[in-house]
Amino acid sequence: MTGWLARNPRDLIRLEGSDRVFNRVLVLGVLMVPLFMAMLAVSALNVALPSIGHGLGASSGDQQLLLAGYALVFGVVQIPAGRLGDVTGRGLWFVVGLTLFSVASLGCGLAPDPAVLNGGRVVQGLGAGICMPQVTGMIQQHFTGGGRAKAFGVFGMVISASVAVGPLLTGAIITGLGDRIGWRVSFLVNVPIGLVGVVLALAWFPFETERRRRRERRTERLDLDP
Image (cartoon, rainbow, N blue to C red; front, side):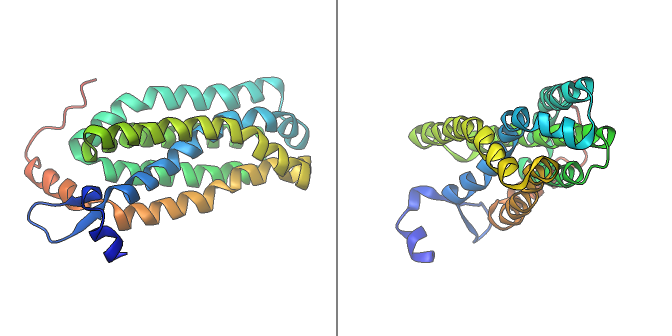
């Protein structure tokens, strides 16, 4: 890995006042994890709704709320979450959001009734809404020029792929495991993926810069611009 990094100097992030070196490609790879999961959570659920209605006894109103609750919270949270990331550190809130999304996915997969499932979807939307502005913010922060254009190209490709793959993947899971178990597994698969994303973020993100910035701003009043 060290030799590969040495042959790709443009991909390195060197921190001021530190000997540590981080790789932009690895950072970008981790940033795509919650992006893929968040978009998958939208497109895949449409396929799972009939199974949820049959297996959990969810009414049509419950099923509509599964879609609307996630989308509403996801949209509302992004602006204040982006401001939090700008002020207190994007990597920190990326990890918080991805952890929330993963825990909520576990809750959704184990939900005993529609109310718990809807609550889990709301928390999923919260986690995704916290993560998303950190993804775009860190691309802006760590990439410049043509590298930034390529990073946003990957960003768009992942969104397109997740929207296309979501229904196919969920349909295959439900077909293979049946109506009662399949929709639960479609939520549970997010848990190991999210946990791996958290571990890699903690290992590969340049948190030193964020900690230094928080120390410098410790005496400043936190303004979230409501």
